[in-house]
Image 1: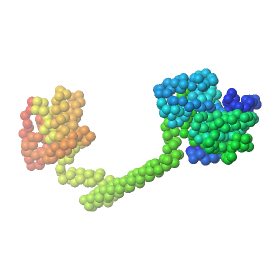
Image 2: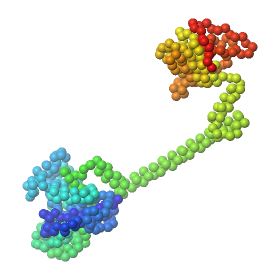
Image 3: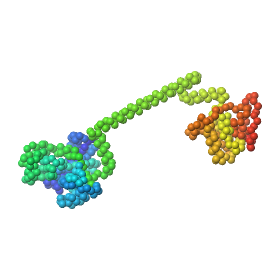
Image 4: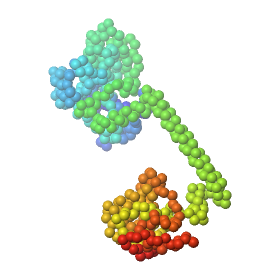
Length: 468
């Protein structure tokens, strides 16, 4: 993930040099920027207008040393909503301007009730800089100082962006300061602060020569780019309180995802998740292959069983359907009734027919459906008939003046319906359980050859015949 570091210009009001001249009419202001990798390695740098700034995964704005003043004080124990007001109250005597015009921010690592560093800058200027960047589409994730307190005495000489005297940025355990190098104030300041201490000196550009009169023995070269990269590594964010970024939840998620995706500390976790996904994919493919192989063996076994049972079947398309068809043909040729034939359905209806009901007026049979003309059924009687037909695998539907008996939908059938159904048996002499009372007299069913017609059962009403 790349990081775009934008170097903000010094506020004219606080700058030690003359205010910069306004850009020519029609000319867009330019920004110094540094593009770095997630490991803070320089990719490229430049100075361009806002619309030509490179895109990056994260944007960091760097405040110049002279844009901030630092104050060390005990952090008050106050709720988050009142912390800024409490800080402003403690800094009231140290500020030269109205606290409402200033932006306050705490350095990282602060604890309530313990001394901590508070950064102060001009609020309107900083808000304008951030608004200008974000108007151009660069969402500023963090605002960091180019020169922050870390406790180690150090001095850095640099030339401001605008023409003027060179500047010394100083820090030590007591505070920070920005002083012009051309006067005697810097020498007096350093002499009073660095007595008996080892000072780390650095300079950018041609600013090393003025450090000679400060008794700086070893001066390290440190360019503005190096200073910007070091500032981007600062573990903090000055966008606090009223300048805190909006949509904190989504921003936290985005920052967390960015760290997870790019930080080296998360690399073992990323590799572990990748390996876990790969193992899952391999396992799913192996399981799918086993299922396909088992299904193929099952189909081959069904085809073998079909051709072994019915050798005349040559082409096997759907073994289950073909076997059922062959069994139905064998049953029909043997004269055995099937589940959708008239005899088993009449037998089941006769067993479930309520004794209080009279005979049906007529019957009409179609394969799998038996219609009985019978009127006057109450809902309770219909429900009782349906419950008694369910063990036989049948269902009853009431229509005006008739009942329709059909096979029960397997999705609605009880688990023991098939097991409870009695085996079908062919009609014979004296078979009283074949039809309901009315159907036994109204259906024109010839007796088997050589057998006399059985006497009809007596019932309150007489059937009128069948309609087949």
